[in-house]
Image (cartoon, rainbow, N blue to C red; front, side):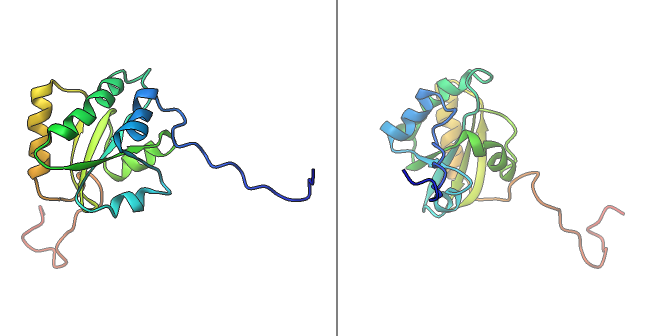
Length: 160
């Protein structure tokens, strides 16, 4: 065996640290993994997409419930949406990008633009109403992210 040839480090398993029910979204329900390296490709997908921030199921037991319900919500929704499961390794960084601070969370996007977030587990009828509402909303700026604009002339729009 030659030791003078450097081997590339193995690629991290996107499922690492994810509960089997979360991984099942990718292996059985057509979801894709979203990582720092693949997020741009996920954002380039046309139409409505949902980023699933799942976190540690020991700390956030609702994660398992959301992982089971999410494909059912996808089937029952009035508009089609894709699912991207955010990798545990990149969850914190991607969550900051969307101002998401609670796990589990579903961040709704349309054509790569932010629509809204649905955090935690909900009753089925509440979920249906809230998902339908988010799918009907226009895109908007991510709340709490960015610097507010101030008029250059310091005019009447300011508070001083």
